[in-house]
Image 1: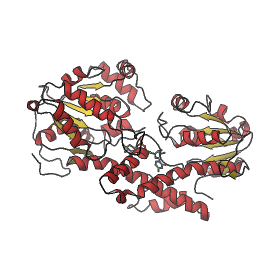
Image 2: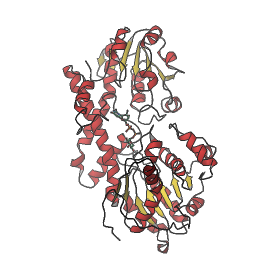
Image 3: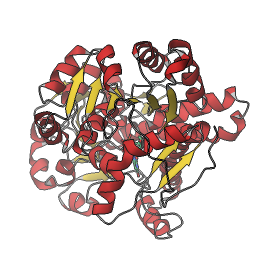
Image 4: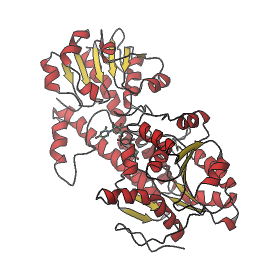
Length: 475
Ligand code: UDX
């Protein structure tokens, strides 16, 4: 049945549906307990739902059941322990148990960039949906949350049809997530919108019931959470379009940084000045080392690949430029480092041999331990490749960084990293770095030179303390 939507808040009259398990509220499962699934599972228990998190990784499940969050995400540990204790939340590696438990199953597995191209690797989606479907014994709703190429929901529906008897009436829906690492708990409990792609009133009703906790919390806080009910394709596209827009905004301001560098303008003042226009807005207008992480870079690539397959490749060609602008920021830091150290750049880049460089920051942004596609770590590796002796410190990302790029030296704190350094590069804008005392650090280094790749330091303060300072897109 097609439904007479799309429409938005106020929430339309949505038919109440009884969960197939017979419970009063739908029991929810989250398949894949990575960043997305673990956060959702924990937060949905906090909203009062009966929750089961599933993963094939037994270590991760054992940790979660023991009250240990495998990632660094502010506030999540406490919520995990509280909800395990309350008995609303548990984790399992047993897919039959997961299938038997849930009314609404959220697919939260990863969709990384394919090894052989720019498109998304859907093998985890396929594996999780197939094994879940094979174990279902009653009606249920399977909801995709992973970021996927448009058309995936239709394909998942076919997969489910292939692996479940038609009389069970298992249905599929899509509901993208928008959580930002570092703010993930609030983004799940207090989202700025909920988007659902559905094909039936039943699916719409089940998804509404599965989100009612979010709407109820908003009502108690005198807020509204807009709901957009739409079709599969639009729901899938909303996510990649949002991320493409954010990536474009960041690369736009970094392109302005390049022009400022060529004309001795100051991109930080330029960003402030244009950001006062509410049509532009000042958020996501921070010029610096550019975007990284597990989402933005791979999502803009997968979006281009999918558009190409659909014959709409030209429409997204600008995203290729967005990607290139972003990657150029990394080589810019290398140039600034060479400049400050008085080294010449040849065709293969600068020769930094014999220099010692302190790298402050390894994660792709502050308040996370995530180093996936982290510009900071990529630059640290480039400096090392150019011959520098690189000493890294990051408040949360050390273990992940060490695993990802073992050839660098990792230090216990800021002081150890900068001691004896000819140059300090601030590559992630952690508060510890922003608030560091340039006078005290100046006593430890061999040379007072700093590259502020996130434009997060007070340049006047550092200059007064005798540092040679270079920012991004600044004179
Ligand atoms: C992003 C989206 O924001 C989120 O909605 C989606 O669900 C997942 O992808 P996240 O990957 O957590 O979230 O990071 P985000 O906060 O968006 O930052 C991405 C990158 O952009 C970081 O490397 C950050 O340092 C960089 N960035 C951000 C800038 O360089 N300048 C800015 O002004 C903002």
